[in-house]
Amino acid sequence: MTKFLYSYRMPVDYQPGRPEAVEAWRTFFDSLGPNLVDPGNPVFESSALGITGTGSARLGGYSLLTADDLDAAVAMAKGCPTLGQGGGVEVGVLTEVFRDGRPVTQA
Image 1 (cartoon, one colour):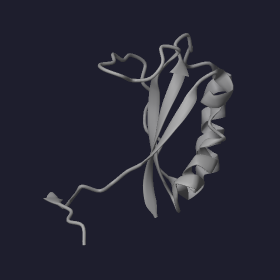
Image 2 (tube, rainbow, N blue to C red):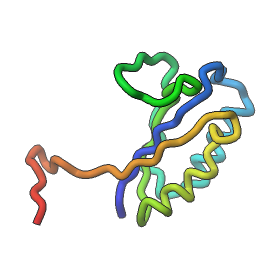
Image 3 (tube, rainbow, N blue to C red):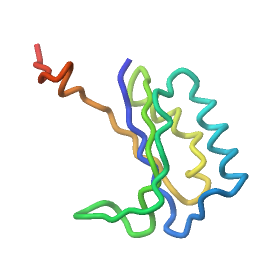
């Protein structure tokens, strides 16, 4: 299976730690089942350089997961709690560049 990165974007006025939000994230992570490789961590402070998107959202955290393809990873992301809170999720395919400390060559 392919690895994917979920990059969460939160509204700039989002207040973390509310009990209902914590439960919503727990439910979301549970719904990903064995596809969830790493639930990641939230981001509470950040600074941006260059073009990073609109000013209405900020970096909120990340997760790593596996899926058969990009469409499947996007379908799983549709349950993300940030979508109902005015935020978003960017889904990216992770490409392996190094394995065992050595560059991976394309065949």
